[in-house]
Image (tube, rainbow, N blue to C red; front, side):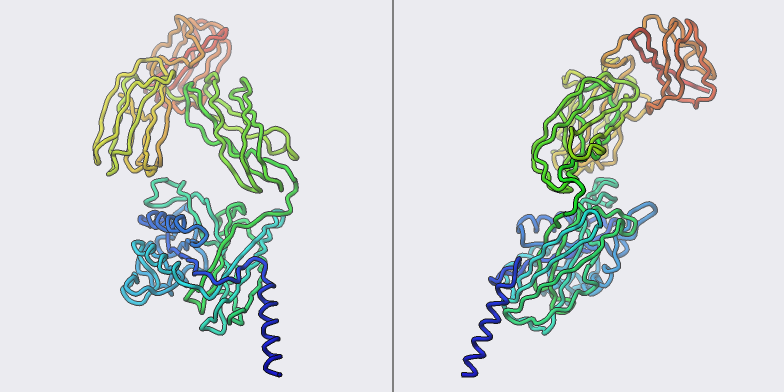
Length: 562
């Protein structure tokens, strides 16, 4: 009778435990992979490691979770560089017995024959990460985990709810529950990344909410249910790197001691306590290279800073106060999500300095609905243009063309054989606006590119940090602006000038002088027919003199030579 009663009580207890869970499954599952990658901003092969780890995750959605630990000598920042290290990384790396970078552990497990140190270390080189991950995913797990989290946007208070359920017995009476806080989409330098200082760092460990080795949990026998909630106030900075709550991610895992990871899971937080229900923010208009009159498409970054999802927005935009165009964006932007919206191309009258203004139409908060960006008129170059191109070992991915303002192809080239060195010269029709487009279908840059004129004035130059390519506009001598006309009989003399020059036949015109970067260095209104202009305070070099009168304008090149 006593044995029967004990059996009934045990069955009741297990049934109660199983039904107490809210987010974790009680059905036996295979192991999930927790791949901890040891990396650094000065590690030349680490971008390849990032790509390999991401491919493993993409091939196994919901089953593989990545943690990038910036640690070691390659992670030490130089002057002005971000510090992505944490106080936790060194001990995690040390127990892995890594001997080079990048390295990674898969569930902190030792895989015979794969150890980077040739012994019993858990760190492995990137060529075997996929093999180790596939082996792990095929194994049954005696533990399931689930996590959900929320961030109060007013206080930056993070609440993490973790559940674990044992479908089998652990060999250890006590296990350790770990909660890792990660940040995505952080721009920074990365050797070997071919993106300059705008490499996108993902899954970057910034904090272990449960400490270096986790929070002890027990019991660890079949049917045990673990329910823990952790709170953490997110600081504004980590090592002086801003923490953006919209880019955060949670990964949880359970270890048998401090080494073997049983399984884990991950999630992205939800957000609560917004000031407004419906609020879209025009964060910024992306930087615009110098232009010479091509219609172009501004790109505005919009963010949902309200409680409710945004599914459509009316966006007004104009250039230099001209005609306002309206674009209706549709999609699904949840709280704190950001999207870059490319607006349809818009015509405009080119000026020395130009302003794009973008306005989001009415919502609950109108204080954040406007974003602006300025850009300059391009410098003017000689009519003889030279292209210097050192093609990398993927020349078939590289093509280019030069277009005129009507979209006609003036010159073009590529694809190329691997390692090709290109040095071509073109005579461009004078007084026109052009666009040089360079394409890399591999999206990885790599080959050096320079576009110059016959005076070796640089139109564009890159060592290879351009990703999928780039576009740059330039104008040739005699260019007056797309919607302008010359003033007849204008003359500048002497030219080159030393300390003073004269503008002839420009009575009552307004004059603006700007340098080769488009910066205004001198201006004067309503000049005389033979106006002397003092330039002794200006450095030697190339300048442009823009004259305007009665709705007409012209730009003349001025050389100051001492």
